[in-house]
Image (tube, rainbow, N blue to C red; front, side):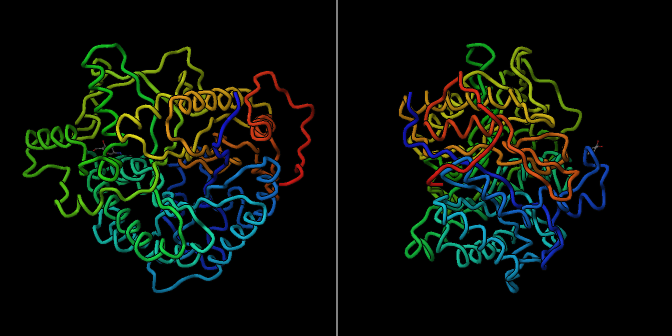
Length: 480
Ligand SMILES: *[C@@H]1O[C@H](CO)[C@@H](O)[C@H](O)[C@H]1NC(C)=O
């Protein structure tokens, strides 16, 4: 079957590299990797990473080799506003992103720009980061600078990449910077502030910039595909609660009909908090005014999708730390042995995974336009990445099934164009269509087998499971 309309694209973070060059300020990942290298699996840092700061011309060549329609990248807040505040704009940082945007547009590759991909300026962290309600204004000020400087050419903005990974992993546990570990408390405070920050940034775009710039502004979460373990009513409810916690907490305030936090989750946390002796719920509600201010503030639904799991109350194993969001809902998950396992412990290939997650989103929010803003598979080093090839083919087949059923899917971004610093996993897990040699000062990029397969899919708009590249020589096709 021919792949219709769907944009086929690629994405990467531009958070890493040149960490203190040309006036860039320190961010929370610079701080974490420099002060606590043992926290990173291979004790590495993103100081240089794939060095896109200097190698962007090669990156653009790779985009042209693949023939992608759009390139999603993030802007590092501390490269534009070194201390986080908008009183001083670092022109060298602006110039870097200007070059990338101008250059990709020459080749008809549309930029999709993410404002925040987990790299808070360290100064703002020291003032509480996403737990300080004032951050909604700080973020909105930053967003305005971005629209002012880039919105004449960038027509697609995403405020946040993966709310739960910012709030739960960063503030409730220790699995992302700033590793605050305020279990059962940090995530909920952060989630509320994030929603208000997003809404402010959206309204600024909508009121001050959209009339002249005419683009869109959206929000991206990470969602796995959840299926009930059995067809019991309890397991269906377990799936609902799991989705409420793992993304509904972030997206219901924006996309649901009535706005506000997911009702069942909200009530559960209030009840648990009371039983635990908290004088008030650990999840503070929005005012009615805030609910109305946040509701409807996204032009599309961005989903980063990787893995999936079977879900049930019967699989719950009580966490060692209470209170915690996991304890609040009491739901557990499992993934069958036979599902292929990637190089990342959290990433397994669930059958029909993309279809399932898109259906779950549609069931929740109706016909909202959806972009798959990330989808990909991790391997270890090596060019022969059969696992990634199989994953992409299956994922795109599954996306076609969803399109067949009328799901409003607009675009698909492979994660990632090239290997990069993978957060706490350092360089031990690779997500790139292109391999990066991190031992080589030139950070040489080499196309993997999957790059040739993805290129063929883009070129033919077909998924041919028999196709094998004739050679591993990559060229730029005419017209790209
Ligand atoms: C996180 O906090 C819990 C207690 O709430 C503690 O048991 C655990 O050791 C902490 N983890 C780290 C890495 O500090």
